[in-house]
Image 1 (tube, helix red, strand yellow):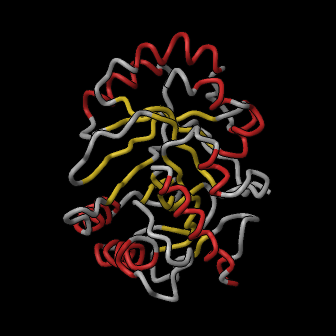
Image 2 (cartoon, rainbow, N blue to C red):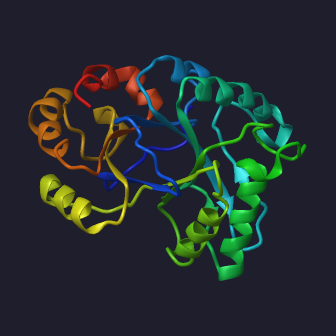
Length: 267
C-alpha cells in the first residue's frame, strides 16, 4: 500500500541539476517509484518505455546520528535484506538508458542534518552504500546496484546543511563517473507560468522539470488534466533551453490514470 500522499501543497517544479560533465540528456518523464506495492517492479516500470528518470523513494530516516533507513513500502524489506534483489532491476533500467536515483526524505519519516559533519557523513554513507563508492560491500541495501545520483525531497525539518551535502556529493563525480543531484522544492504558487519563468531565469541548473500529480487523487491540489497540459502549458515551457521534461508522482497513480501515456508524445 502507498505509504503517503505527496505534495500538499503541490510540488510544481522538480529541479534536476546535472553536476559535472553534463551531457545533453533527452527530454522525458521522471517518476517516483517505491511507495506502493501495486505499481509493479522497478524493471517493469522502466520497460514501459515512458520514463527517462526513476527516483527510488525513500530513504526516510537519516541524520542526527541515526542509522539511515530505507522504506520501499511493500516492495521489499531492507532490514531482512530482501531489497538487494532490486540490483537486477537497476541494471535492467540502465541497459535501457534510464537514470535511477535514490530519493531521500519524503512526507513521513525522521530526518534532518544537524551539522556540517552530519551532512558530510550522510554523503559518505550514500556514496558507499548506493552509488559507486562501495561496490563489493555486503552492506549495500540494494545489493551491487550503482545508482546514478540522489534526489532530495525534503519536506520535514530544517533545510540547513543540505548545501554542504550537495557539494560533498558533487565532489565524488570524477572522470567518466557523473553524480546526478535532483531536488523537489516544496512551495505553493498561484501562477504556474510566472513561476516557471522565474525558476528558469534565476536557478542555476541544467534542466528543470515540471512536477505534477499523475492523478486527481495523488495530491491535495495541483492536478492538471492531460489535455490542458499538452495543449496550453507544454507548448510554452518547451521553448526554454532549461526545459527537461515532466516529473510525476507517482508510478502507482500514473498506472491508474494513464497520464504519462497521454502526454509522452508532447513532452
